[in-house]
Image (cartoon, rainbow, N blue to C red; front, side):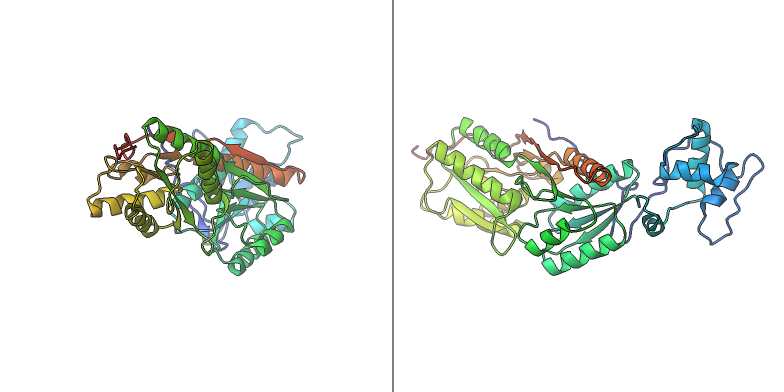
Amino acid sequence: MAAKSLKGSSAASRVSRFGRAVTSPDAAGANGAGSKPAGENGRGSTARPGRTPRMQDIADAAGVSQSTVSRVLTGAPNAIPITPATRERILETARQMHYRPNPLARGLRGARTMLLGVIVREITDPFFPGAIDAISTEANRRGYNVVLGHAHSRADEAIALRAVLETRHCDAILLVGDTSDQPRLMGDLRDTNSPVVGLWQGTAPVPGISIIGVDNRFGINGLMDHLLGLGHRKIAFVGGAFSEGRLIGDLGERRSAFLQRSADLHLAMPEGFVRDARNTLAGGAGALTALMALPERPTAIVFSTDVLAIGALHAAAEMGLDVPGEVSIVGFDDLPMAEYTTPALTTVHMPVAEMAAAAVRAAIDKGEDSEVEVLKIIKPAIVIRRSSGPAPDRGR
């Protein structure tokens, strides 16, 4: 099965950190192809060089009233119809004049600021940059920009960051990565004035927070079915620990799913076959080394993240261990680099784009209706590559 491409727009959907929104030249409006630029029809911009253009400047340049400009740029309901040609002329004029709405001023007026705040748990995890890009791309498509902050896995920093995002009048806050081990932050977020949507938090309901999750059990069962079909019965598992050695959110669910499926199938589970390691390349390498040193070695290893699995592949190459001839290695997430490892990694494809779209939609809809609560669980897909193969004959 070929891996799906998760490449997103980068130029039009960049993000910044700690309260500074980065916008693209196209963020202010729709494509104005075919419309007349500012200054035609005998009118020119009244904005002085060095001064931020105002709606009145756009109105003067486009030959319309300021109220018409306001209705087009804010998306306010129109009692009086605005023709498509006029709308396009206004948007093109705003684009050429580099008009940017003032989020703080809009927030004080009670209007939407068109900003989404994003708190990221582990920016150093290779999975999250792609996830953030997908969120930013979808937000930009809906006319929103993103304000990004890194919580560093510390509750005090995350709480302070939440306050920064809220005071910047973000219309909603997205949590990326599990923060359930920070009860003070979670309680604070439930009491915030902004809607909160959680991504990659696991699939358990969280009061006051809309959850968009992946079906971890479905993914792990898919990997197990694949390995069982290849004749494997000695299957080990390595979980990625984030918080003081604790498995949380998605990673905890993947571990539980593996243990449940193994118990259902009555698979032998020698001591040391289930291990936890810090979710790093080094953690994966160390886990493989330990597993291969056991008196009874596994023929296949399920890693709860691609990061761990890729670290294990590197360690296997250093040890001269044949993958998949001596041991099959599989992961979870389908990072972009997974198809370029040696051998290419069998893994679970995370539906990042679909989850990002659902999260942005939930954030915007919840902002319009405070009663909206979402618990959406999306099924992933198994991507079979060359790191998994038939079980070696070890006297089974």
